[in-house]
Amino acid sequence: MLRTLDLVDRALAQEANQAHWCRELGIGRNTLAVARHRGQLSPAIAGHLAELLGEEPTLWIALAALETAPPSAARDRLHSTLAHPRKKEQKC
View 1: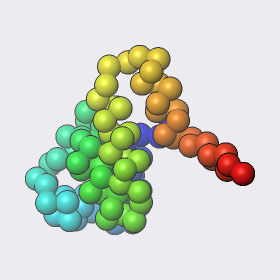
View 2 (view 1 turned 180 degrees about the vertical axis):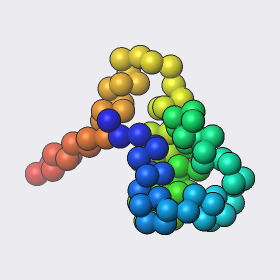
View 3 (view 1 turned 135 degrees about the vertical axis):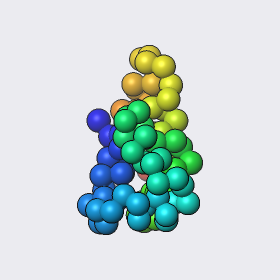
């Protein structure tokens, strides 16, 4: 299952220094450590980090928002849809 912490892992694979990413994001130096402890990024940080990594920010913002939602079948279905998008059928 795709999670916003996967985005943090991708960032740290590029540049292992967490303080570097906090400076790039304009956040406090402990913010990413706190996010790891909580198990999720805020939508704003997820979107900004995705932009810095050249990824689609909308996807990561949506995933971050879903991570804050209470558990439900609807949340799980939406998460699955975001993590594994289906190709839209082309109309003739």
